[in-house]
Amino acid sequence: MTSSRRSRDPVLQAIAEVFRRHGYEGASLSRLTAATGLGKGSLYNFFPDGKEQMAAEVLAHIQCWFEAEIFVPLKETEGPLTGIESMFRSTEQYFQSGQRICLMGLMALDGETPFGTQIQAYFSDWQAALALAIHSSGKLKEESTDLAEEIVSGIQGALVLAHAQSDAGIFLRRMQSFRRRLAFPCGELQ
Amino acid sequence: MTSSRRSRDPVLQAIAEVFRRHGYEGASLSRLTAATGLGKGSLYNFFPDGKEQMAAEVLAHIQCWFEAEIFVPLKETEGPLTGIESMFRSTEQYFQSGQRICLMGLMALDGETPFGTQIQAYFSDWQAALALAIHSSGKLKEESTDLAEEIVSGIQGALVLAHAQSDAGIFLRRMQSFRRRLAFPCGELQ
DNA sequence: GTCTATAGATCGATAGAC
DNA sequence: GTCTATCGATCTATAGAC
Image (tube, each protein chain N blue to C red):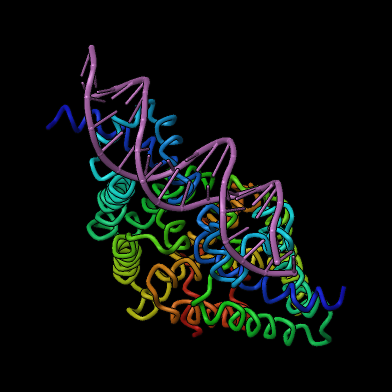
């Protein structure tokens, strides 16, 4: 169990990279075997239900990582602003300053995948945790929800644009912009 | 020429919908024949270079539409604010209030497609036209560029989130938020 | 110009040797 | 647990009848 965990994780990460780069339909078994260094037989030994199970487990792994590293700190940190700043830092690191894509966002656009529920949960969990942190930093409840929606969607858009322009600077500039937006209370004008 | 144009356009639109729904790799010829009502032979008569040519022409068609309906009005309208408002309206209409996906954004994330140049041009043209309109509405040049980047990427993110949550309201709320952001000069704080 | 038939490659998945 | 061999289905693309 524990040793299976230890060997399963790097395989899952290699698989995740293939899904990120090629999308669900483009992630062929030949690409997956090449990326993992495993034969088809071994892959089906790890994931008896094949490609769909691989994608489902990758998404579950991502959800767990964000839950532990971002959502929980957002909800629990004593000073809520440090939770928010830790979110920005973890997000920048996870997406490699904008060079890496969000698989949840890609799958959301891709559509026609059986992962709608997982994707929906990921985004609503993120937004809820962030809205709570913003609210307890002193903003009104309505404004917090709105800002959380702006930032969660804004991060996705920043990843799209950064990848389209092959310019990670776009992502980092957007993240700085979100930080400023939370620091200055100019949203109260409306 | 003119009659070929007339018959080519609806075919191209049907093809575009398939790419939007299934991505480049998921847009199989069988789906394309089903959506267009044409046999493979006819499709290859229209597009001798096959799927890649179909996608390239779809993207070119989209670029042309945005150029004519959004970018030019942004650059040319007498009162620049009416150009910006017309952009918001056309954008909401084009993306069907957030129910329709941006094919350029999807292809940008999809990666590994040979359309990087077209995608890059689309986004930089949009941002440049919008920045110019914002600048001539009275904002500083630096702030205009930044706001244009925020809005162009923000629209993409709003489409991602709206599709993930199956909630077009998200897209419409983000668009309203952008309008407010342009109306109130609170960005000068930093 | 539209269709059907089909080629050749690759797809996801399985079987069975080791 | 890992591999190779192979299945049937589907893929993109072509050929040729009408």
